[in-house]
Length: 114
Length: 322
Image (tube, rainbow over all chains, first blue to last red; front, side, top):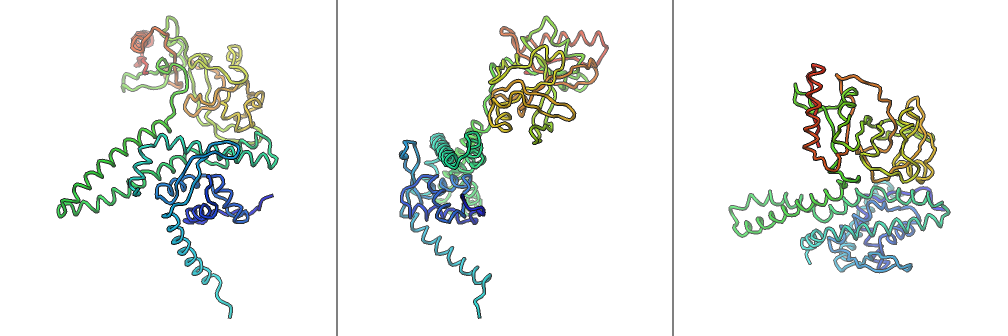
């Protein structure tokens, strides 16, 4: 049984999560990306399918991902996504920025113990 | 390849890219369905849940397409507005701006044709060019309007330019079934309705002439309604629908693609009692006989209308509009 408390993806982080997932997973299709984010986040982050494909299109257009059609193990056609060099560079910047902001937020809501 | 070029690339291949996107979504739904089935759901539950999880496909397609061009166009026009202030000072920039503007106009037209093809569904009934709306033309105001109960029977009486005709009236009505209530496009119809649109039910049967005569408590529903409420179309048969104080049972299911009037999902027989000639309550549609043009039908109805005027000394004349 899956976790009951699922959270939506924080605004603005979906692109980063997709890029990170593809960066560590290699070559994946849309469904695998969604499932991987869900599983890697211990069933907390459920990617809305309604946001996933627009995001993938956005990343294709920006040149951060490239898509190539292939076959799934049970012989169904799927578009497999791969990270580009530009995507890897962008991911680095996004992650750095995200961590910086996150640490700042953490400092505010969790003041250092005396 | 620069970002601008890539956008134009995706945009030029809109149709192909759309087909690819559709294919990705279908795969996603199929894989999700497999997964849910492994979790022990029944097939009907699976189909419903997989589609539900996927959300509004059309909206998603729109949003995906937006990624290719429209957002970019907005940005571009904003840039152009800012840029145009510098045009006089920089002739080199003028050429670039004019070229970009031309591209922008091209994109706009393309998006319109895509929207038209995707959003405005094609007519789903047979021979739409033979189906006409029959209306009353109020001579005082020269405006077309609904048909009154009294006029209607004269309008479709033999000799008639129509193979079949029907009245209908309705709208979004609160319908309750199986403990759930929702507003459904529900219309009271006449015997000729199925003939005008040459309908065949996918399950069950049409409402019979006898049922129309006795105003039986029966209804037809669309496949979309049947699947939404009962899981599959076969299960809709014999189910009870409540509307206000009355209860109707479903005798037939019409194809999901058939939508007339545009939002209709439920049709039931009307008690057409009114013979009043002064107020038009009903809308009416008719199927032209194969060899009759809309123009000929218009002429015929004009004659009927003039006869009305002589007989009833009324201010109305009848007409029809395709």
